[in-house]
Image (cartoon, rainbow, N blue to C red):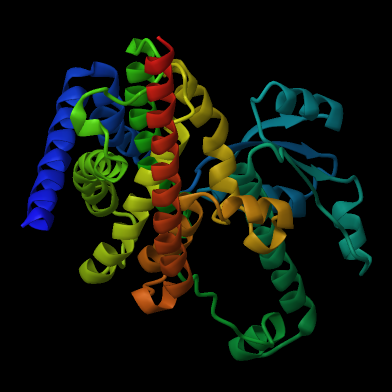
Length: 400
């Protein structure tokens, strides 16, 4: 009977802690902004920015020193591409560099004076392409368009000099080895389908960290002894305190996660190959790991504003070390070890494979097990930190 009574008492305390934390959240406008408004609107804003997936009509400067029929034909084909447009014609490279420096253009196409002459002499000619590498999408559009036009020009020259009699012979001359280019996992070849899934997972972690850190920072600022734990009887049990607060955060972010993962991609037509069952079981440890990760970091936050600095400083590094925007094999070993401490690393890797590549839960077994391991480890670390807060509070009360 005593065991049953203790279980009932513990469950009642847990519910009281959950209710008290939920009431505190709904009374704090700052926490509500990061728990509700930011996850609601930030994914929409980010997805809307990348809705077009690819850049179009990138301005390019042309320096045509050849003034030949071949260079003019090259320019016409280049300008006809939907990805780029000829913005200006310049007399020399120095003038073209000025336009690029003022961001009025993002690339330069240069034709030397002997461009057509060398071709007529049966010699190899060249076209120089200069791109602003600070914008990778602009570089991709300019360079690929110039390469495609150069390939078509080469094919036309080969056909003219081959002396073939049939169209089939012309096809073999220009393309002796035929191939089909198929873009797997990113059929549109766009930046949105590439980066949005990883960003959505990072939004879940970072907004959760912001909300929990803000709530804990507020509690610590209001406490005379610098503890974020209440001094009533309900908060003497470490496990019930951790579980009660974690349950509160988890319930809120179960709804937020469903919206971010399932609703937002479909609103903007991004690739989504998720299966409901596999998605649920994968997101369960990810959200739990993020909850305890946020509780760990928030336990060392003294003021409300500190958590904003932490999130701003860590958001971009967390995205890079996850391996979604930079190859995982190219990340230095030290930073790979650091990445294992962050839930978003395994969350992004697994979610991208499930969402974009159609992987099943068994295909992301490594990430799935890693998230459960983080959940268990982070839970016990959180309990130790909360226990230390209890000891700190009692010592302060005894000293007073």
